[in-house]
Length: 379
Ligand code: GDD
Ligand code: MN
Image (cartoon, rainbow, N blue to C red):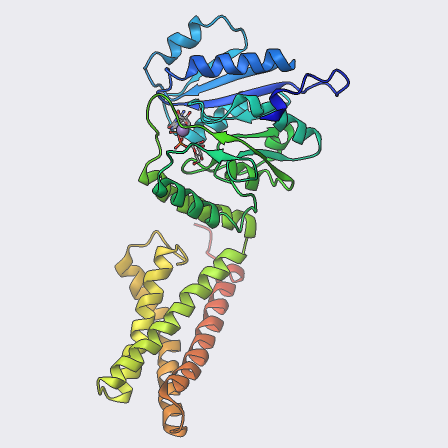
């Protein structure tokens, strides 16, 4: 790393004070090395730096170790409830008093020597600086298996609609405390706290600096399959935060689009199997309704997600029956009237008209529910 060799520039503006936050779970073996390296970066570069270790009650000697250290810039927070990497980081960031906040892992995967380069980027006007494995000059330790590599790339790709940086998964980042304090609605699930902060603090100038991501020397990774599933839920929430109303609309269109597909495929199969036209059209419509119902409940598009599914299904059928019936009648009429058309084309006309009726009806009912209040006599 070239910045390591650059001597401290006396003419450069003074460094801001830096609070480093490190979440830990069973990292007692790594911590002495991390503290030593942070200490020597601070000394050699003239940085005012403090370190907050946010430990989820590891009981592996972490607390004793921190207490026995001579440095007066160390702080330990031991958490006994609401465990989790992101929650720990947020708690540490809230306690931090430095002008700049840096977050990193305890296991020496992230080089403390890169911190001055991060500060320089902030001074140049960046809102958020990421220590990145994937920009020019960055690298990962050799023994990263294919699976871990592929996994990381897919996760990165899924974050594309939120940010264009090459390593949004990184847990090594820096931002001004001001930026953090302007963030709102923090609600991370899983461990992608950096991505959460970029989105919720509305960081616009996100800059990456290359780092070498070293393999951990001690202990074990805490990344599990469960964490990766949580990541998908986290992404959904971040998309919703960033894109607002757009997301329910897109979900609605996806569910509806799949319903159309189910309808057409069923219709084609049933007609090919020799079913009577009226029966085939009816079953295709029912199949699409079933798929729409199941998908909208999964995606929590349904108006009352807390309702048990049998009741929800009854309500759903009652609400959509008029459109479905109209769809059936129009499709059959179109097949009758335009024998030259493929029946799928007739079905599309029926779907469009039936869906329009249901759309208008549900909007009307929602309007009434909002604006027409039933007056009750005082008790
Ligand atoms: N307080 C607390 N609570 N800390 C935790 C917890 C927890 O439940 N789980 C993990 N940590 C700490 C670890 O002790 C370590 O300091 C840091 O969080 C990262 O955990 P690792 O187990 O080392 O994760 P990793 O190496 O798989 O993940 C790293 O790479 C990812 C990108 O591939 C981290 O840098 C992630 O932040 C990063 O997203
Ligand atoms: Mn690690």
